[in-house]
Image (cartoon, rainbow, N blue to C red):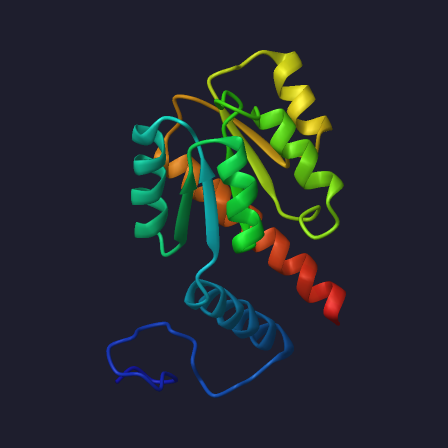
Length: 170
């Protein structure tokens, strides 16, 4: 065992039994991160193309999230009423109510106004992106997208949301 270390085989671990304010903050960040991962967030993926919802479901489930899917705007609104998701991935081109309409309805309803929405669409014009963000989406991704990028954005937005909620509580 290396001198100054409490753990055999862990050279330079710095675990000497000293507990400082900075180490306390670091430990709290780790605990918060572990806690957030242990509490599975529910994601609603809305797209009329089953290949897309299958891909999203596969990768986000692998990352530890619970995923529900909807193939139309009406199905999405019904799914949100049945069980409030922690985040919505929303396509714009849907068969009945388009993604802009769904976003607008969700933002006008007090119970759903704070659910983070990420638009995931093949439309990539600046006007489309700006309209989606003006209607209340927090982010906009264009198809095709990297599953890894999608997973990271979801993780980032959920962490941001939980940080804001914990600050509001304290």
